Image (cartoon, rainbow, N blue to C red; front, side):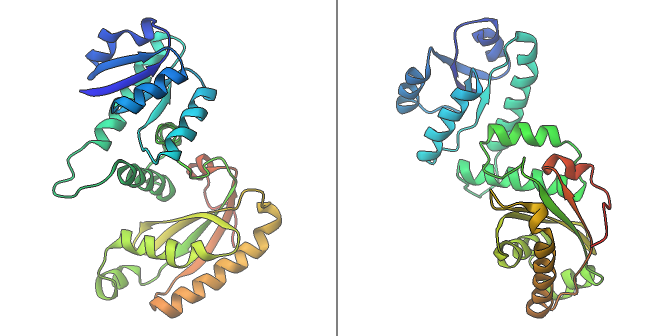
Amino acid sequence: MYRLLLIAQPTEATDHAFWKAQNFHPVEIASDFDAAVSCLASHAYDAVGVPDQETYDHLTALLRAKNDGIPAFILPADPESSHAVIRDVKHLLNRLHVDYIDEQYSLNELSAMIQYEMLHNLLSGVSQDAERLYRWFGMLRSSIPLDRPCRVYSLNLPSGALYLEDRWHHGQQRLQKALERNFFSHMNHVDYCAVSFITPTEARMMVTLDEGTDLDAATEQLDSDVISCVNEIKSYLDLDINVYQAGTAACVADIALLNNSKEA
């Protein structure tokens, strides 16, 4: 059972029996934000439901200040819509509270793992469900800039399979993270980047720039920086890697639709 806090007035959408049937119990209702803050100070909850975007924003600020990874979601206005929302919340909580064998992860660490997996699945084409990604990232209060324009690069690794087998013994995901964190994330004005393998010989990378930086105006320099970074990777990792295509997506959701937009 998942312990739930709702900031709402009692309605059919917040009916205890209905939520309990979906594996939520106890369900506590706070009449306003201040009452919810008092509840959060005295009890632990698995998720918090709020009535509107303004309350969600206030709650997000509060929880981030406390480094609290509890998921939050906006309650739908009508009971019919609440069924789908409840299923989504329950599915996310099942992922957050799954038994990871002997590993011990904090809620924030598990949240980061889920975000990493979902974004990289979208980037690599394993998943096309951008709507679900946006819903879950909202519940996880992700700071990844999903709605900002991003530059998307297709990368070719001619000897990638051999490299992963003979030279790099840490697995494909570790190589993704090494490319992201040790190289591409250090380029000028880069706020966020993700590299995801499609096959051992092909990868895709997305790059978003700092808020306020005009991507269109910075594209030429960014493309040049990516090529320079690729050359560094060749030198430091002895990895044959090349950029063969690049395009711009209006937001992360458009990556699912982006298909060979233009050559780099």
